[in-house]
Length: 109
Image (cartoon, rainbow, N blue to C red):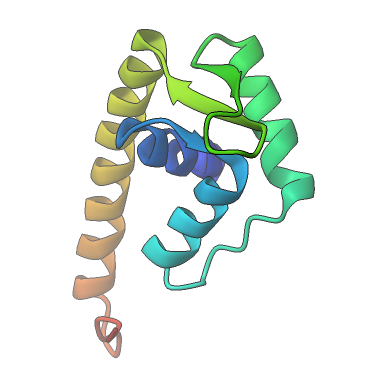
């Protein structure tokens, strides 16, 4: 699961610039609440991704409220693509193993 939160945040930002609370909401909706991302986890993650140049930020108050907006960079998009390929291969491997194991059934949504 290592790095999965990075990939999730980068996936949200791939859809367009977002501010912190909006990122939390997008992830909550996309994961049906299964992946809580409290502010104490999200903001250090955003600061690290920015320090690594995978995202950039800017302050904006055009909506009447001063917010820090984050957006993915080209290196961030490349990292997201690499991680997505790795995670898809990993998920397929696990799926194959579970399908071959007696007594296991696919999860229902």
